[in-house]
Picture (cartoon, rainbow, N blue to C red):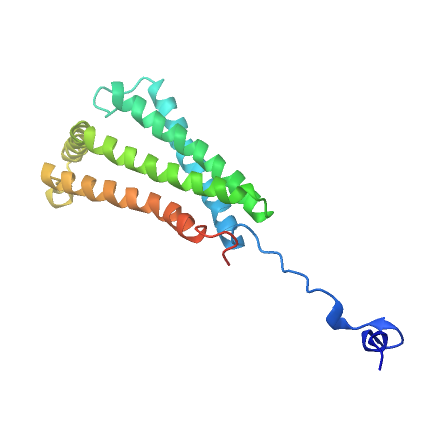
Length: 200
């Protein structure tokens, strides 16, 4: 039998084995990473942006002398954290949208976002402990104010909250560490998952 006969089957149609296999499209970033990134980006913009707007609003308002308010470098540091975190939220939305559409640049954008977000978390952690005593003093002042108001309202002694400085220090320390770890979880996940192109 001739070579032509071997190649032609079903009335002259070429054999299916002669058709090259079509490669399956593999996205640069897994789609679930893209979706979660967009959601976290939106929440980040709402959370950090809202806190920044609130801080700006309170800074321009007259407030009672006993209301704890950050001053000087601490206030500038807080606005830096709020502003940069809001911009990173927008960055994450854009990078996640690019990943959802399969854009080649999305993987690099997500990885850069992750590294910068971790760096910002470290800066926030350092700043939080640098101004720790200032925040502790303001917090204790607010607690003392609330206790004084409870006493003036003739509330039962058992219902008056009692928080010592050591207890407040422990609470604030745990809170700062937990928040810093929580902020770093998704960036670490992004770096792990996107360590190889086309990860499933």
